Length: 100
Image 1 (cartoon, rainbow, N blue to C red):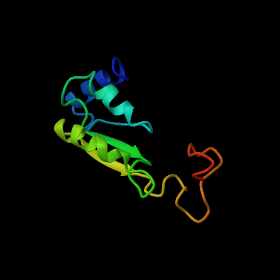
Image 2: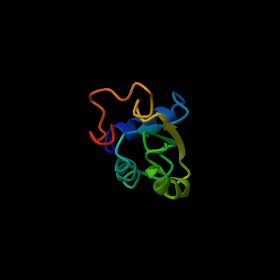
Image 3: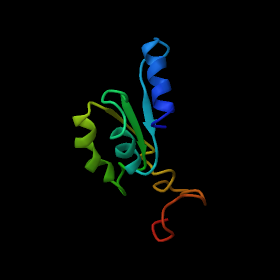
Image 4: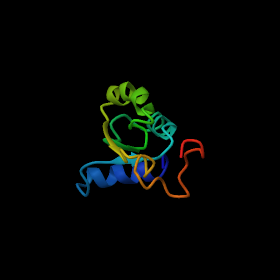
């Protein structure tokens, strides 16, 4: 991602083929790991899921860091991939059995 994908996307952006570049991932550490290793301004937005809902607000800790880098944030899966629904999460859901 750092050595090949992001540089290729930057070339596409400079060529006018895309307007924005974003990354996503479930573990929040992915964002700092990537963003600390690429040129500033390379990434426009991050999409995080399951880290900003009533059972998990850990994305809040990352907000000042992302803001300092001028990166937009999209939070997805406010129902925590089914965890907060009446039907409950699918079998593969990463939450502990106790939380499910």
